Figure (tube, each protein chain N blue to C red):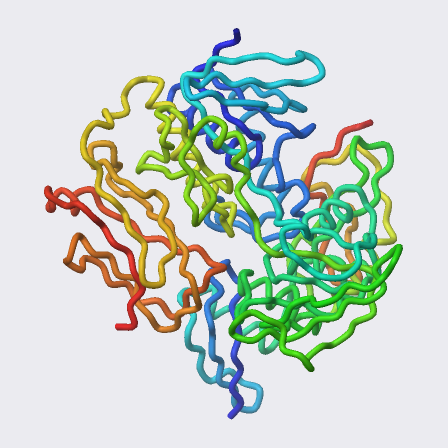
Length: 421
Length: 121
């Protein structure tokens, strides 16, 4: 059996940043396993700009951002295997993988970093009525066809869902000569970044219809028309509000789901809110020595934060194999998200293992204007941060100080909530 | 007095900015949380610009398409002229990040450059 100190599952932005950080933290034996034929993950098809403002203080495209990390992987001579599919991870960290060259093989890992990313929610999970003709794509599939393979999936387009990839594809297909007729969003707010609504829809006069959904798809061989309708507060279509758009293509941008089949079969505890692993302050899952970062942990909006999170996971995996990560025996402080906050990453904190500063990331469940992010240590309000706007599509964070937590030795629960005042 | 509501695109924060204009002159800017927002808002109401990203056909490479971008931002009303030039060009492998693909795109004085490395097939 092969043996590596750290095995990283996935060579996208999370896996690359985790690998670089683990090497910088002094771990020599690292292996990245990537199922695609190249490193970089989804960034390879994200040719638009806007990446890297936090990490590199400049605005890069996806491939450029990925290359910054790939370059470091090459320079540091970190090992990786491409075209390699991980089949199984066991609770004692034996990774089973396969590729055409090596066949099926096993690796004993000192620590595992889960960095498998996420998947798009497919049509089958959306219950859209109508026929099943050709011409219905997830936005990410269309992005791959246009940007990597050089094919236009269609000429007249309706988009369901206002996730970032859908917005980006509305612009991309418009630039390549398609007519994007409308973007319909079921919810009363967009799940995409504000800047994408401005740059990808407003710039080209593409209407965004909030509280609308697709109620019919027409076409036997190929999509010929899509009907959308307004939905009420119960999310049900309102009769009489139907609008029919002739088109040859329907793109779906209806959310991303962390890809955790491997985590599940390993026995990693998953959060029902994020669909990602439940992790502690070290980004360690319920299985000791198995860490998680990036979109497999919770879906991010910005790759910069994926890199930041993955760096921590890589450093902690390195500490774990070097046995410098403090024991996890001490009773942890629980983090609770409530009243507007949907979840937190991490969900527990062991102060012995905590860095001087700990970033707690979370999302809100609705749009909040002129509200406060409040952090309570048990019943005492410790932080009260004013925000002009918070939306479900934009991840929020608070930073906890170790020295502040040290002032509360009996602290049991930290609660994050959204307050009007 | 004219009021314009903008969403800053200077960074992913997306600050909501309110600009007051008097006879085309900026009188006040509110809501930005950094210097970038101020610069963006002034520009957006007087001289809006964008970075354009796309792909070009590449011959003899290990990939079908070469992703490219305008090296700096170009006037917003030139976006489709820039796309016309980008669609007309064919690159030859190999290419490296930063290689100039078009010197002066659509008369903007801005270059179009490669955004990934493409090796020979």
